[in-house]
Length: 390
Ligand code: P1T
Image (cartoon, rainbow, N blue to C red; front, top):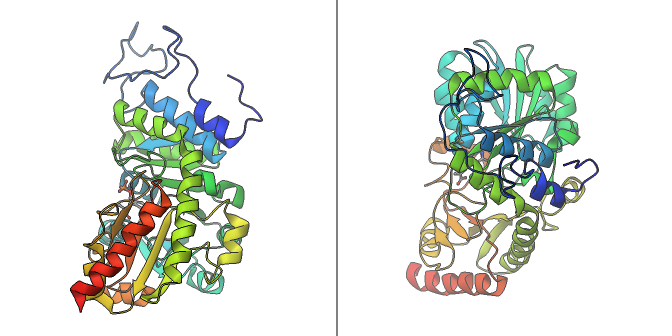
């Protein structure tokens, strides 16, 4: 189908989803096969082995490329598999400038994984562009950004940061997991490579683990495709199909996630029990104006600190009923967690402290339930945790 000129919502539903040529099935089939027959050795119809390529994965990759506004995309078995594959572009002696507020698993992969192979890292607050500039060295090959960041929701000026990388001939990588392509498309801001944990908003239903890399240039895509096949961190046909199904409703879900989160963030900020609330949609957020320019809406993630610190926070996260106490984010159901003890436990306490990640920080992934029900659930937790921690 010719989708040139189609807008985001239309691309989400249709990109990669032409009717099946053999049956006319409207929904792409799940090609649950590891291998493909060849008419003669080396002569095949585009597919030979499912690590290298599978038609269901191709449908997903076509869809993801359209959503990020790129020529092509690659799907992976997890966000970490995607990050690992991207890091294979580097070699010993190369240096990476990375945000100081990253998903804990990414930090772990860098420091405990690629650090062992001689890749060096400097972690900086990437909202401070002078700090980014100062962190560059002659051997810096990559700038790794998360915006909004996990879990403090810091917003980096993508155009300016990618420009700094370009001037120094380094690659700009943006982990776009928190925003999703509906809220921002980093390639338009100058990013060379976009990463997703499709486990989150793209999948959208907390029923799979997956990842994606979307390269701005075909040559970069080809290098990554080589490593996708060589390393083998690919998603199954079934998981590819689940992500594709999720992508079709991304736009409507993100609108509701964002509306619910904005309402809850404003309400949380007004509560006397709350010490500080991080949400890019709040006028009090340090990069609020930038977020307004850079993002279509502000997303479904909020983090906040309670007065009364760690004990009060532990009581709070154990008192919600709709907000389930669990890691991950981006699903239709609301989740609550404490990053220091859960998703960011791999970051050493002194590094967490330096980045401003308090032990008592609470992170919400606001789902698409009725917002009054969600607010009532948090109200209950305020009452209950006050009773339990005093
Ligand atoms: O979990 P996985 O699909 O491997 O994705 C890793 C990842 C990468 N980038 C960001 C910004 C992420 O948030 C994650 C995973 N994050 C969580 C599991 C979490 O609860 O924060």
